[in-house]
Length: 177
Image (cartoon, rainbow, N blue to C red; front, side, top):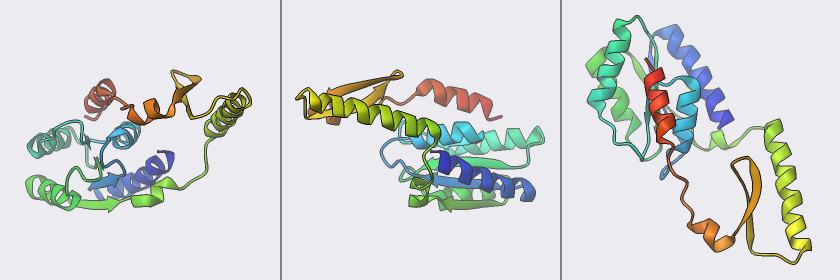
């Protein structure tokens, strides 16, 4: 997500200099976690995910209200597969008069160096996994849950669903004005 955030930051620089709306598609066809976290981190005007029904009318009205308050550039972050970003961009342009451009980040957002935290957690998880194997315990998935390294039966782990953070979505929405 750090790579996607950095890319949207760069896109925002252009949006600011040209008073544009940038509609950016991130990965997440069946889950909006990437869009939610990246959109929150970059201060997106709107975040469109599969978990939350969206209305173009609401997004357009939000942009118009924000423009009345002197905001001149806007970012809309969209989970892939949720909406056609070309259509979203066109509708924003038609209904607000704001030049709107689209960017699909695609698989390039998977790239980038792991953060220090990523590397430390990977070391902890690897050590934990080897310790399980040393104890003769297999078929486990090692994970981090609430800041602690834990393990789950592989079938249980595959059946798990990560709940969408509706509170973070609400926070991002309220902060976006």
